[in-house]
Length: 120
Ligand code: HEC
Image (tube, rainbow, N blue to C red; front, side, top):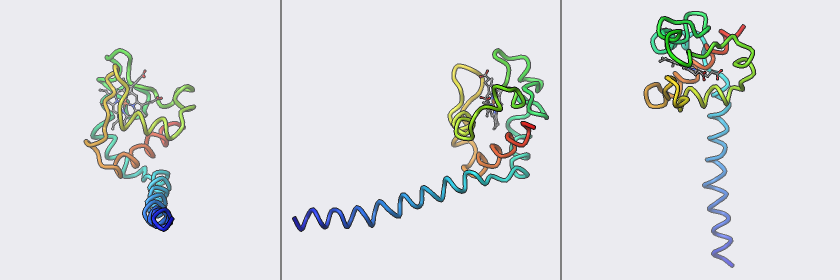
């Protein structure tokens, strides 16, 4: 019985702060900086997605399927989580590769914020 109690206490101290920490990450996720994201976008994404995010960059319009047009109705319906998942892990078998590891977490959040700013 004592061991069970100790287990619960340990779980409370180990798991709760961890979960709270995760919460902070999600809160931060919503707060990417679009201005910083623009620089990331111009370096890593613009050749495919184009300067206005219409999928018409010099490379993006030549590939099949073409790069996603962020201003399309279908793309505007995507949630932050869906866009984030595509940026992080890519969309095989299209030319969209995953950027996790290539870009830092902060850069990914910033570029996500910039992508969303192109939707208007
Ligand atoms: C080599 C070309 C290429 C590059 C570089 C590229 N993408 Fe893509 N991207 C694509 C293609 C192709 C798709 C998928 C289109 C489809 O599914 O029809 C895509 C899809 C996406 C989507 C999903 C959009 C939606 O509506 O579902 C997001 C978000 C995205 N890219 C963001 C980025 C970001 C951010 C970068 C830079 C870090 C980037 N892409 C770099 C080609 C590219």
